[in-house]
Image 1 (cartoon, one colour):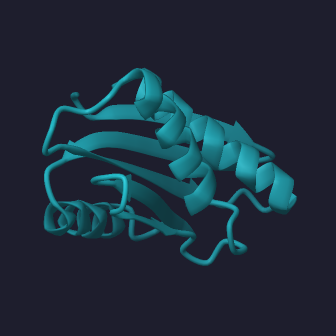
Image 2 (tube, rainbow, N blue to C red; image 1 turned 30 degrees about the vertical axis):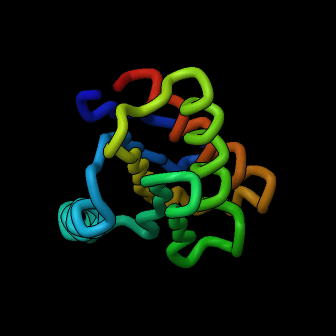
Length: 124
């Protein structure tokens, strides 16, 4: 998979998403650090990655608990049921949020992170 990029906009907020394969937790953490550095001016840099059935991580990065990382992970897991990764590969999705000034609420955030992750996967 090449790096897929997606975009979702809601009430002035912009969610830029990236999906890419990773081969280890070390590489996933390096890529996350790279995105955080590149998008240092963003309000939130949220992510989820899965390397195996038992090895996965999520991060809401200041968003209300469960409104960013888990929707990204659920979107990823749905994708992986129909697009399994090769043995030894994992998947990382990072969603960068630029706040537009209007609160989206927990439901709006969950939809936004889901849609952004889905767009990156569809473009990967």
